[in-house]
Figure 1 (cartoon, rainbow, N blue to C red):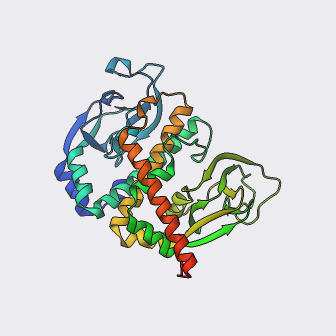
Figure 2: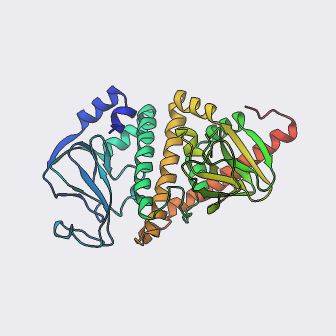
Figure 3: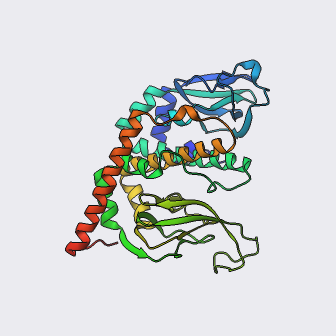
Length: 351
């Protein structure tokens, strides 16, 4: 199995983690993380196998590990990160982790990782990118419990748009405007076709779109034609401020998701190649963008957990997030005015 840390991080970054970490030996059946107490360390699994589970109980002790309310949904092997990831504390309080076999982990102090993320943008970009792919894996495991794909997720109270515009800086929005193309689409226009590669990431400026799931037969040439006999199931509705195709744009694999407009819709479209080049050559932007994606995935994870019947009421909006909502709305409105000014003045908004 591919080791995500060895794949995403540089040798110098791995050496830093090894120098900062404390090795811990675990025998089989040890509760490493419970769902009530946030650990002060982030763990890097070096040997053995760990189980990641959900529990309805507020407090789990060693003797409760066979309780029927515990739902195991993932198993981790060499190279995986586990624990409370800095900046995702509010989204991971429901998880518990135990050793299935004798195991060895490297305990990285959360305070040291947080400081490294603040001071080293290249490390932050690599760390958040690794987090994105780990969360995607976790979401896949969780959604399999619902019998559906990762895309089949409900919207949370904290809208995705608020996360995007609260995390990105004004310079990031300037870049999106500079390299993007404003496009108008009529209703029932396909923005993303299931089974085909993604060429652009879209930001909805006005209007709405439906995210639909399509189950193609294995013999169907989905990448070539849109079959009228294939039924679409609506999973979610997207509106102003929502991103479309952001995960597929960085990963590049075709999916079973089709996105089509529900009415006249205006979008800002950013070519995938421009986005990938920016992520590769601008570590500050990459750190912020991958952090946004990690937050979006964590938000979706909460939606899946709720659908599975697990209580996440402890993760309600706090004053900080309410402030982020206000900041995000202000930035989005500023972006709309900036685009409108450029269009009215004839200043080019181009690829």
